[in-house]
Amino acid sequence: MVLFAQGQAALLQGPAVAVVGSRNPTPAGAENARAFAGALAAAGITVVSGLARGIDGTAHAAALPHPGSTVAVLGVGPDISYPKAHRGLQAAIAEGGCVLSEYPPGMTVQRYSFPRRNRIIAGLSLGCLVVEAAVHSGSLITAREAVDAGREVFAIPGSIHSPQSRGCHRLIRQGAVLVETLD
Image 1 (cartoon, helix red, strand yellow):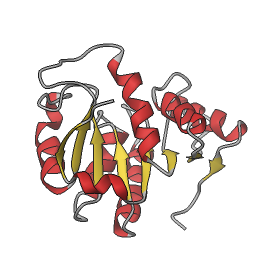
Image 2 (tube, helix red, strand yellow):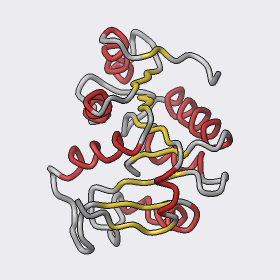
Image 3 (tube, rainbow, N blue to C red):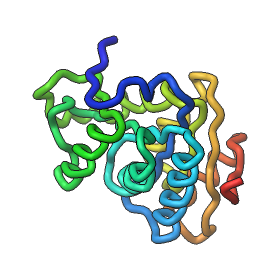
């Protein structure tokens, strides 16, 4: 496998945790992503995610104030910004963290590429924190890839009334570590 990197590739050598979740988080989910990603980065742990809308972008943005604290794994070529709204965030990560892609420059959005990049997110990380996820969330693919790679999976529970929490509840029933605090 060839990986295209922009930024500080040395970040791939240190301790890292994947922080993933819904593209359409609840306000509580977004706040949890900010709090956990910020705390991990402040502790010197690199936050790895997929630069998607929602939890991924929120986690990257929360980690960025801590130098060398986030790695974005893209499902497109390294020169493509997807979603376009994250163009500035992607540039900031390339400057202060690392942007990775297994896809060559110029490769645009392909349906298969986003689930495939999840194995890289899981493989780079010591563990995977699923902040908020519905039952069909792509974040559950990342959690499965983490289990397959022998990594620990963590999940934050949410309201029993929130569809955005049902994927996390399923992970917890299946053995993921229930996370309630930053400790």
